[in-house]
Image (cartoon, rainbow, N blue to C red; front, side, top):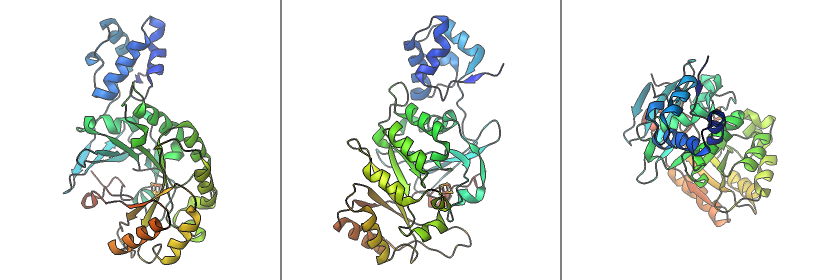
Length: 338
Ligand code: SF4
């Protein structure tokens, strides 16, 4: 019989496994607390459950936590991890410590099939979706697991192309019986899959970031092929009209490329698209890859862009890059780590 991984199950699902033998929901919560909050790797080490339950669990389940196979540390202390599943799927995870705010950037797929022009992961190809357990494992298996305060779904893969597993992972991350991280500290990033965005907004309280790249549709189509199938204008309307709960954040990620998407006409077009909305704009420096003639916009240009958005009433900020020396920054993940 194939044993079932407990990592990736909700407390309710664990209860449905142990309930028929007379064990309670509170036993299930003890199990989920041990796995998700304490990264307990062996069933025998789970606390607050009877020995008989441990024996029963061990006969047809296993914890399912697996450690990274390699890691690399940046001069800024960002750490990139490489994971490999039993079936050989590889994916990378980035841990970004920053005083009291420690962020983990998780992958949702091994590779990606969206084919965005400037992304290293797109060149790696698509090797498969990650299960909810494989997503959660990236947080609870690293040495600094207990220090994680924020989770961003911005690693390899398009999260909304693996929506059910991402929603399940968000549930485990935010639940009291899970990692108990506030949904305000969890952000899912997408290039824009309209049905997935609608379902995500309705089914989760976590934040959503849409990667725009260009406010001009023909330009965006060249960089983000999914634009041909799911027009960003419709997605922006959905985001603008969605009744956002207090403190939940809907934002745009805008990677700034010199002369390509950082001109005054881009600012003017962005202002029109975001007029009257509470959507925030996160400006990010561009990281060029090999044989790429494009470079990032200068710091001055990014400041200018930000200033112009803010004076027009649009909330905007500039994001720092981390882990550039180990190719852990945005758009650079491609399992070059061995
Ligand atoms: S930018 Fe994101 S969605 Fe686009 S190819 Fe890269 S990983 Fe996939």
